[in-house]
Length: 111
Image 1: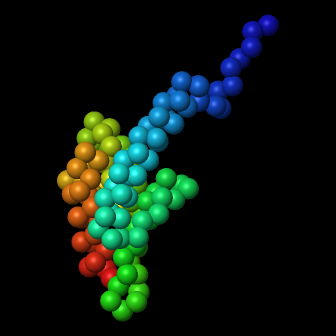
Image 2: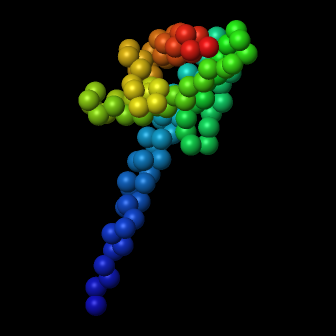
């Protein structure tokens, strides 16, 4: 009698590749977080892999955004920073200062 592999679980090689990709995204978020802290924004890396960025408003009401780093299918699956469900224009992880400027400007407009 032949054993049938469990089809409900991804193969181990797939899991390792996913973990590696997730780590690459986290590494890029860490670099962006350091850049944003240098801009004096409050930054926290969340357990779910997002980066929460907060700026205090002049009226005491903070503005907040959760940024993620994931692959963009329309760009050959290269990593991009995302603000919610929208990719940040001209903000590939190789250009994290551009992403930082975009995020800071958006948050200051909201605060």
